[in-house]
Length: 125
Image (cartoon, rainbow, N blue to C red; front, side, top):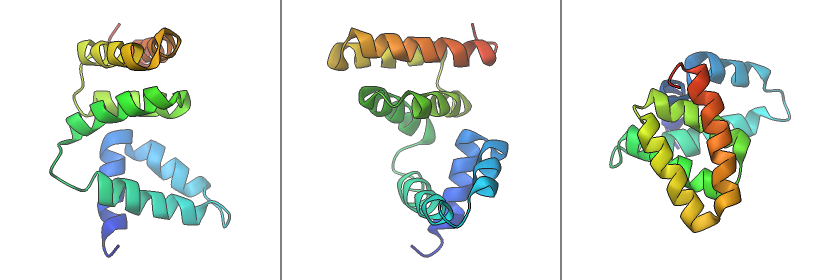
C-alpha cells in the first residue's frame, strides 16, 4: 500500500474536514491506531484515491450504501462530507428516496432525520 496512507489522508481531510480527521487520529491509541491507519490507507487511499469515480459521485454512493446499512452515525459524517463534495440538498433528498424504495420507509425516515440535522447545521434548511 505504498503511499496509500498519504493519498488517503488527503482525500479523507478533503471530504470530512481536516479538524475532524486530525481529532480522530490524535485520539487514536495503541489499541485503535492500527485500524485508523489501515482504514485511511485502504478506504480513503485505495478506494477514494481511485480517480475513476469523482468525489461527489462517491459521496452519493456512500450515502445510499451507508443509509441501506442503517449506520446512522457514519451516515451523518458522510452527509457532511457529501455537502463538502458538492452534493446538493435536492440530491440528498433523492438519495434518501432510493433508500426508502429499496430499504424501507423506516430507514428513509432515519436518513431524513439525520439529514435535516446536518442541513440545518450547514444553514441549508
